[in-house]
Image (cartoon, rainbow, N blue to C red; front, side, top):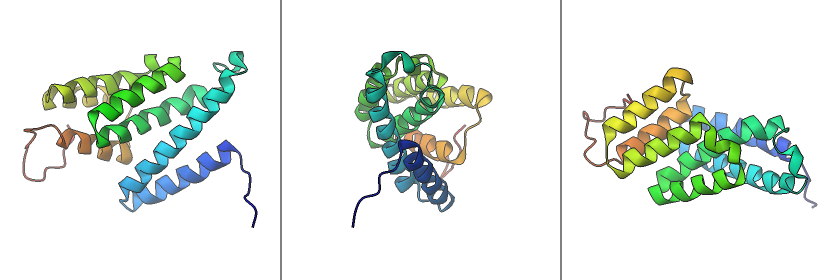
Length: 164
């Protein structure tokens, strides 16, 4: 039984389909693992593209999609712990400098700072500001809420599932 060789794009499309299915089922942990897998594919692609240098910024796939997957992968790392997220963020910025100027990267930095200071108000404010420009989908809302709950003393209501 031979292994089928598929393109990165095909793999990402399949993983995205799986993410949608698992998100609809409420299986956020496995969806998060798929986001990390996609980010790893982009990491590999970036390494390959750096060899032909000039194409990096001209490749729309990298320009727009990589940013989104690095953002989601960093959030997945954040759920594991703050240090994991910081290391992932540094790695993504180093690999893909355009990520540094993205709204997603700026949000991650604000969330890390708020988490470090155990400041749920600053965390909520950063999420609100981001959401006012780019609406949060169900997956992002769930992940951001999980991270918010890890801020000590964030006992707003009994089982209150409010991000804002």
